[in-house]
Length: 182
Ligand code: AMP
Image (cartoon, rainbow, N blue to C red; front, side, top):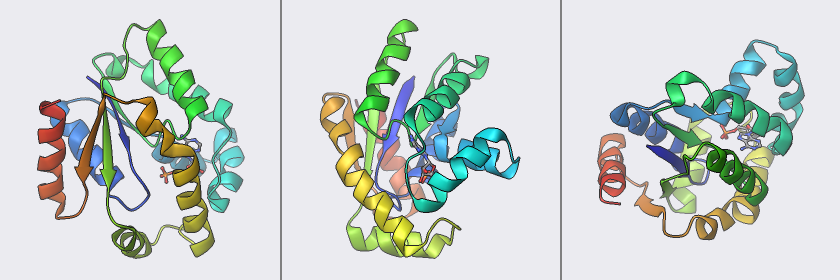
């Protein structure tokens, strides 16, 4: 099964993506995690991505897309994958559609995980990541609203809405139910 998970920062997307991928037996492909791994390993890609990540800006599409193409063409992703944090804008979605059409393997379900702004903010301030400065948080929220929310219409008919408020297990069950009933 090929799925995407979309939602604002702080909605619990990363946690829920990991649990969902495990339940479905497919790899969890998080572009943020891939960039952070490159950062830690001090690769050229990591060095390039760092300045964008620190500012809360998107890493250029071509760079991100190349990384995604690499990852989803690995053997463990042949049965399916859950993309977390990608696509983040319409050009990335168009690119992904082209890539997956070429593999005759389109996206089947898009999980939209949401929560009220106050819940998002509280969770983000609690996680204490180095790129969680007030400015970077605000920048990422602006980008989410401007560039990422149009994906909801783009994937119309494949989107399942899930309320992200509640305990981790409770929300996980909601996500699973939504995906299975789609
Ligand atoms: P995340 O862990 O999803 O919050 O991602 C952390 C950072 O990685 C973002 O603030 C961006 O700088 C970068 N990033 C992650 N996914 C993407 C993407 N699809 N396109 C561009 N930049 C991304």
